[in-house]
Image (cartoon, rainbow, N blue to C red; front, side):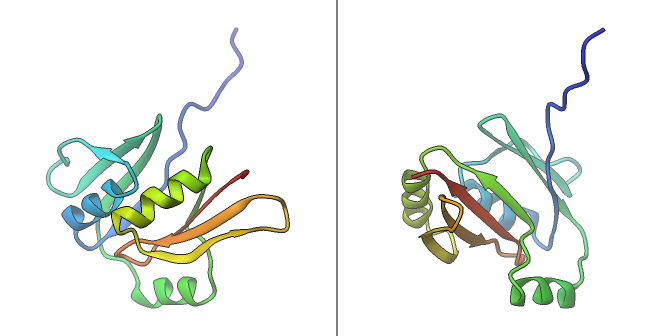
Length: 124
């Protein structure tokens, strides 16, 4: 019998405007199929998934998380400098610029239109 192995682990972000969010994550290189029933979409990039769902969220919670720099997701990237340059050129909202960390990576944070904060990091 084969050992169990996870093949996907995807965040699901609640969003106010599905089309706006699809466009925003398109700038990060995600490609989306046609949304289901106009409220749910799955984006793919490099074999990874991101799920977006048009649904209410709590504005106070989003503000608290942003104020205290609580991440909603973190991603490892091979070629971090090139990816950062792509994001900047595409107009992605960069919340924290590319900078070295104490643990030897270069990281930067982005914020999507709904206030989700995602860290991208990788070895230089």
